[in-house]
Amino acid sequence: MIGKATKHVRTFFNTNGFAYMVYASGTILLLGATVYSIAEIVNFIDSLWWAFVTSTTVGYGDISPVSGIGRLTAIVLMLTGIGMFGALTSTITSFFIISEEEEEPEQNDEIKELNQKISKLLVKIEELELRNKYSQLLQLY
Image (cartoon, rainbow, N blue to C red):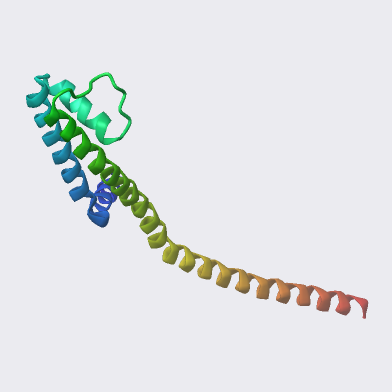
């Protein structure tokens, strides 16, 4: 059970470079938070919160830049955030599509096997019906 889960997680992180997207996104967030923290003289945790909220383009407004460098950092985070979260979303979607496509051949094989079993059972049913009719005819004579 754990082996299957590990395999799915590994597959998920290898889908369309998802791991690289996570690393790149994390790096951009950390750089933005660091620059903002230094430029605005704000603690790093608040800067990290600001960077995340800004990059997701939510922008709560609870923390906002005042300096030119802080505003420039905000612009960069906004622009990269749009692409970054869009790419992360498409990577996650690709994983589920690929997973479904991998299951299709297995399901098709099972369907073929079940259809063959049904065909054999139908032949047996026909044979039994013929025997039943034949025995009924014999009983009449």
